Length: 259
Image 1 (cartoon, rainbow, N blue to C red):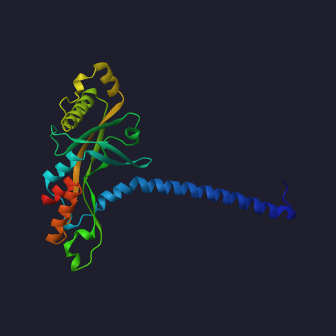
Image 2 (image 1 turned 30 degrees about the horizontal axis):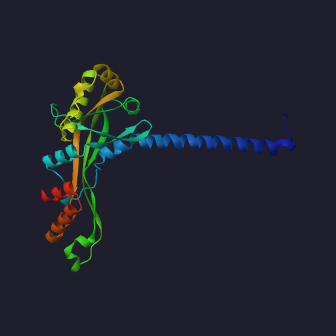
Image 3 (image 1 turned 30 degrees about the vertical axis):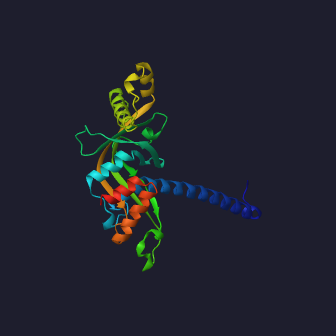
């Protein structure tokens, strides 16, 4: 189209619209790249800034036997990873590999249909969270309420394990992992005739092993918290223990008793 004085406004308007469309598209691309960068590096920033689970001094759990007790009694862990597509959390039973020469090593498996092993690489940083029994604590349980006011709270125990994950399709490792998991938790059922992995037909077991991916997590750091009314008066602690016991929170009550 030939440029004339009469069509200059139209050309200017057309150029303006094109520039605005280009600007909007560029803005979306930059925002997407920024969010991707922010997600990708958030765990790295978290790791090196020293930020961890909030644990006041009086709630710190440093007893190895208590940490092991929590993990063994509440094995359904939350596995949190920072994948190329953002954060992913999975719930799966994990077992401490006592035959490992590492200080703490967790083993377990996921379904092959779970894309987790495709989203992250071997040796990537992961966070594993174990949580024991928890309960609401009412101010009515504090005898000291006669002298001063209180507010409700929550008692619980949690273990955060930071480490590096590796995946395995090796049949020997998969079979060993499944054997250990089933042996430990079948025995906990206290049944007369526990289910035994050796009773399963080898062909069927082989087909099942083909559908899972083994995982191994070598723990590099652990942070544990037992919030069990340690910051209360002795008479309040004793009564909270009694209330929890009476309401069926056996594990939590016994944790208080062990303090």
